[in-house]
Length: 169
Image (tube, rainbow, N blue to C red):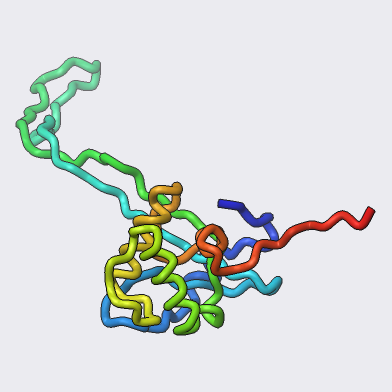
């Protein structure tokens, strides 16, 4: 996914002031922020994943003399302790702006995903759970694990025009 330059990338503070609009009772996608240059960006956070493994937990602190001699050794017991399996991550990417997400656009999105065998629901013109799942699956296979429609995905599906530089020479 293309990355914006430092001056046109949304900051964490800008995202924290956004009040998402619920289109569905189920939270489907992160909010999108409009930038001053007309682009929009979305943020996707992936929480850390922990698992419990057996480890040593200190129950009693060691007693140590002033000269460094151990008077009483520490006491440990085996117990489950948390271990990070996957670190928390956050990505910010160019997304389709909210004003472009009309029912007609969303119907075209659903049909484009269905034509590629990713969407198997009814064409509703809304971002419902089956549509969000199809977007996520399509984008995950291309390196972006998000249910928020990226600008690159919309272009790959032929839903948004691709800017082409034409040389006038």
